[in-house]
Length: 333
View 1 (cartoon, helix red, strand yellow):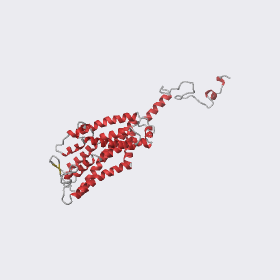
View 2 (tube, rainbow, N blue to C red):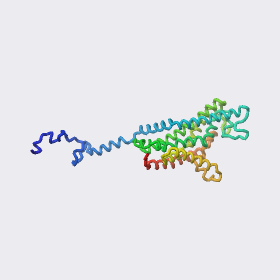
View 3 (cartoon, rainbow, N blue to C red):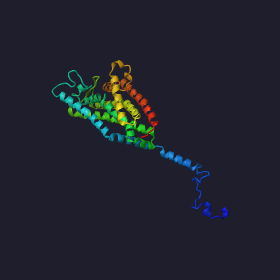
View 4 (cartoon, one colour):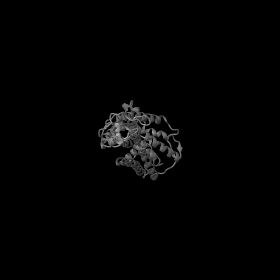
C-alpha cells in the first residue's frame, strides 16, 4: 500500500500528530521556525534570559531583605543595646560626679571631649557620647556586622541558595554593603538619640556655646548634632568596606568578625605611635574626630572633606577587592 493510500491519521502519525508552526519536528528533521522567523529553541533561551534578568523591584526587594536580616539578628540588637547604654552610663556618671559641686572630668580635665560642658547643657552629652564611642564601640559594632555579612551566610549554608536567585553576585554584594552602611547610620543615631534623651532628663537644655565662642540657639545646636551624627556614620564607611572584603575571604563568620576587629585594634595602635606619623594620614581613623569642626562658626571644612575623601578611597579600594573576590569565588558550601 502506498503512502497516498494510507488513512489520513496514519499519514500524520498514530497519535494524530500534526506539524505546528513554532514546534520542533521529529528527530532528524530541521527545526521549525516561528512566525518571527526564529528557531523555537532560540526564542525559548531568550525568554529564559529575560525571566532571569533582575528587575529594579527585585533589587529593591533584595536590599529590603538584607536590611531585615541584619536588624533582626539578636547579635545586632545586642550591639545596638550596648551602644544605647553607653550615653546613659556616661550621663549618670557625670550627674553623680557633679552632684556635690564637683566638675565633670575631674580636676585635671580628664575624660572625653565636651564632657565639661554637659552639666551646663545636656545637648553636649550627644557630642561627648559620640566622641567616647567612636574610637572603639562604634567601629567594633560595624566590624562585627560587616565581617559576618558574607562569611556568615557561607557558614550557615544559605549563600549558595541566594546565588540561585536572578539577582546576581554584584547586586547581592551591593545590597549587603548598603545594609552595612544603613547599620552604620543606625548605630550612630542610636548613640545620639540615647545621649539626647539622657541629657534632657539629667541636665538642662538651652543655647549652645560653640568651640569658637559663638552662641547659637538650641534648634541650631540640634541641627549641628544631627550633622555630627551623619559625619560620624560617614567616618565608618572605610571600615565597613574593609570588613566586607574580609568577609569574602573566608567561610567562617567568627573568623571574619575577629579579623575585622583585630585589624581595627591594630590600626588604632598604629595611630597612637608618634614614630609612625608618616603613615597616619593614610589610616582610616585619622580624621574621625574632625566632626568637632561642625561646632565652630564658621565651620572648618578642610578636615571634614579630607575624612570624606579618605573614607571614599577605602570604600573604592576594598569594595572593588570584595567584588573581585566575590564574583570569582567558588561557592561550595
